Image (cartoon, rainbow, N blue to C red):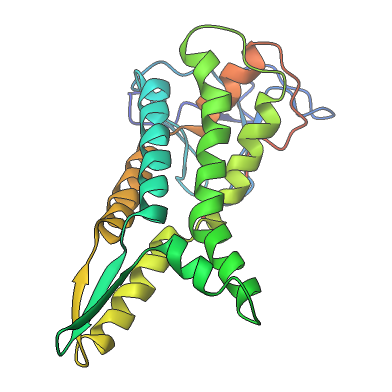
Length: 235
């Protein structure tokens, strides 16, 4: 096989050792559920599903350090996005600038409070939590130390939270709303808006560097127990 072909064999090939009762030595495709006998990958190799061709593993050199750096960047951008001005609206010499924190304070009372809390949780809270979980999991591994006791649970939760991170949807919704508001007043985008735009690029880069299989292998090689839910459903 060359470096671009699948490096996981099907179960009928006889390669590798596996246990059907415990699932040890097996890897399931998150898209089509095809089972493969797991094999160790070298840096630069790519493992693809023999049925649907989905990428199952693609380890990169220095990926842990890059993901850690991007996670720190995400936290910094999100903290700035909360307190820096998000936009300024002006008309006929009168203007007003506000931040997400200011909006939350403005609607801290009344029927809109649950909605404001839900928006802040999905747009800001979950991305920060996910970044902290990734740091908790990857920092010891990048330093060559044993992972923390709950690293497996932390990484699993971070992957389960990924579809609920709504920063990208928030930026798109805001852009659509501003198109309508622009005809009524002058709108100036603040640094918080651009912080959210930068966050989208950071998240895309983080997903490009991340290889779930490599992280799970590193956790298992360190002796931590996993319960077979290493893969979450593919997007």
